[in-house]
Length: 122
Length: 283
Image (cartoon, each protein chain N blue to C red):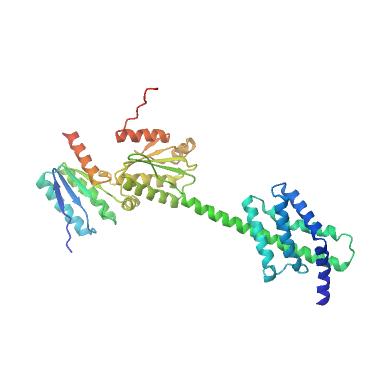
């Protein structure tokens, strides 16, 4: 039952690809894991791929903002990629606009955004 | 009963004997009424059929037009009304086609002072009234059908999402926006963004004549949803009156990019895509 979301490291970027139905418990576990991993690797960016996520609730919606805030403390940028139309509509209807989170259509564009942010900061 | 049948016989006989001139006058009267929008040949063909179907019904008062004896004339009238609706005739013009026969028959029997004949005429008049009302009903029904068909067609062609450049989609909105329609537009646009991998979408509302808070709300939601997916929306073609309404209603567009025309919006999107449009030296 204890499903964990894998966190993969690609260069200076951590890739979180969510392939399971998210429970509140796994969301909390993911936040913990990610915080540890960023601090351990010193990653400069986090990509959350949610192209396989079809159902969201307000808790998951807030997860993105929380992860972004956590990453920011480690000076890492967060990009949410591959959001499905239905998910986007749901989040808007829930009134969650993910203010501080960057978004991209797919993983490739998300990586490009992080690349740009990094070169701009450097 | 036999007396009744005999009585009816006389008017039927009279009508049958004078069918040729009667139909001719009937056609003339209706043709004059329709002012040349139906040819005499067409009317004559229709009315000959009516007349043939009507003859066996003479003597009835038209109270039971739903009965099996009326099946033939009903289908004829239905067909007639249907074609009239499609040709753009008014309901009164259509019903008058039936009523004008009355005048011709009255003229024909004018000289008769037979009280029996008078009674038959009354019944015949009632019959024609009933048939006239029937055309009215068929007319209304046919028109309802057309309206239904059209509203279905309208839904089908709601809103196309078109790709106008690599990475740029456009949604030209036309007509009135309601919740149901905006929902469809929103979903179609977001799906198209994913499918084509476009990062820019232009929502053009040049064809939208009224915007209220709800419609604006829907537009804003669409833009925010697109943003969540990683795409930017540009709203273009806001009419002067609509701009005034939006300001008067206090709707905030926030940091959403709005442009006066689709062309401006496209230029903006291209610039964001990193495309430069340069005019070539004239040849």
